[in-house]
Length: 316
Image 1 (tube, one colour):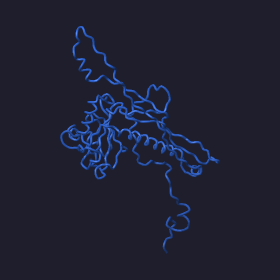
Image 2 (cartoon, one colour; image 1 turned 180 degrees about the vertical axis):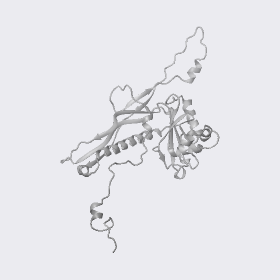
Image 3 (cartoon, rainbow, N blue to C red; image 1 turned 135 degrees about the vertical axis):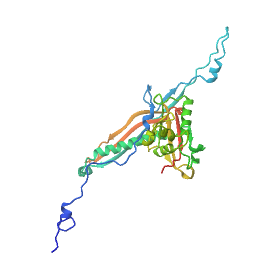
Image 4 (cartoon, one colour; image 1 turned 30 degrees about the vertical axis):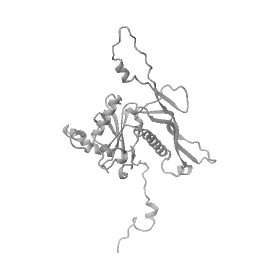
């Protein structure tokens, strides 16, 4: 006579009444590139006259090169210098705007959930806030007028496959910043923010003057780790949230990278972005809102301290 098993596969109620799917009570987050751009904002109003709908920051100009050349002429013994007008100031105006986002959960969901819901809501809303602020900053950064494109393309729409980021583009950016008199961010290096796919193009570059050859020569420690570190006067940060769009030739994906000196970007903040717990106003207090709110503005403060690099990456 064959054995009769008591098992999950047999009837009798055991497989449905006593064996249940288990759940891990620890929530793990999805892969999530974090924003980085706000760390490069270093200009803020210092002594505003009063609260208003905008705030203007002024820059004092220097005398022209022509006046310096004229001053090289020796003075006559019995003649005086001709007085000139002090250079006019220039200004940058910030107009803060309100931004925000909210979601509402129900009391019933909170009462039925097997894990605390509120901490997860706070984390996700805070992540939304940080990414929105990063996007607002990039909206301004891409307005900079100093740009170099892969392959020497004349416009964004002309960029195509093979027009990747090169070491020479970085050299051009650093040369431009130095020629403008832009200050480095730490006294030594400018800052560079690039997408990991763009980093791939730079690290695979071969031949003299490229990144790879010096790393191979210097025992290859950075080569083994896949690091860029400091290169050609720029300290690099990789970030997968950098702006890209299908606006190259034949809808090629064009990546934007940024090389920044001091005071390239500025902000005016009325209310620092942060989490807000909305009032529960329904009759039975069952609908619980949470969101974020901020009142601020970002802008390029010194265009001369910002270079944008546009390229089409070979990475897939």
